[in-house]
Length: 278
Image (cartoon, rainbow, N blue to C red; front, side):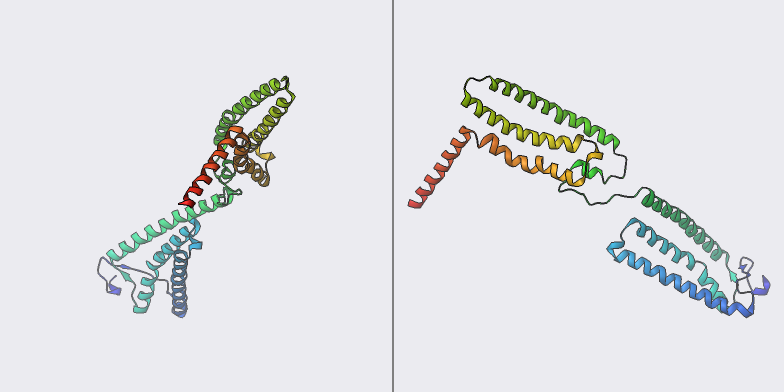
């Protein structure tokens, strides 16, 4: 220790530049590597934080890896290069303690971060996150479930049970009711009345079949029999077409409703005449 003019608490490095012939080349190489590491990692951090396309979990982890690498290399290389330029090989006890603490902290953080990045790659490849694009024209449950990453078996079972309660039972009531109505109408003595009743019931049954049938296909038929294009077409029946047909068949063909419509239009015209005279 005395040969290097140090105190009793200082430590002496044997150094990386032991051979005079190659020490200059090694110094230049390490300097270039150090500057390249700082610049490259700095650019990575800048790009990841400024470009919104890189705001993903993978690049989030990469930005932290770049930061740790910058800090990690900066705890060792600058001291080594400065000691070479100044011809020193010593480090104080406090300095050695600080370097040791930073080194262990940063290298430990990088160990955990690399493990987390490996797990992220495993999830991305073996259990990939689904797309956010719903192949439908609204958020229908089967279409949304296709995007789920977790096991949806329990949810699908519950949904199936709900469909049995909400679709099959009411549909069975509707079918049995109209079957009894048709049986009664069939035995009517009036031919004209029978024709009108059959026409009304047939139109009602058409709408009911479109509504319940499309819903049953969507929610109760196994997925292996589905295709995105078919799902969209069937969904149109009970989400778009049926709401348009219901008032036409159930209401506007009713004499009471048509009479009320005529009276409302008459009142509107009379009010317009009164306002025009005023």
